Image (cartoon, rainbow, N blue to C red; front, side):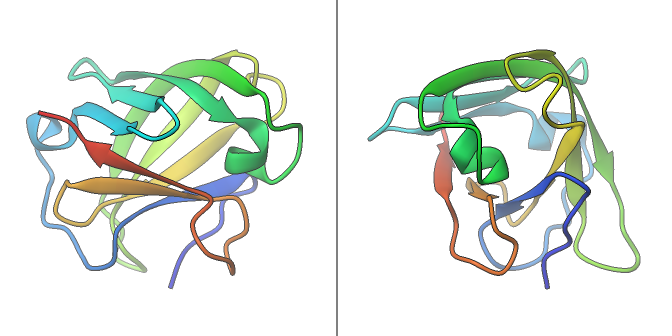
Length: 127
């Protein structure tokens, strides 16, 4: 089951995660085909580039945009644990308040522009 925030959900590949350490979650995730990236920094900030609004919120265009803000781990008893991305800078800053990033082992993340549809973008953790 995927949760849908007021804006959109991001999901890690299937399964549950026991990751709760910022160092385990932080890192660079990239789609090598498109060049889309998201950086989760240990200080709780994030930046994303090369990701279209369509891939994040299902509307707004297919041109790559940049956005940034803060992230925090949410240990959810009601569903899968996730990272909440609070978007407060960049081209999505006024269009979306935040997105959810679901964890599963730390190897990949998936954007779901439609919570009931397939992933709109998959990003793999980079070494």
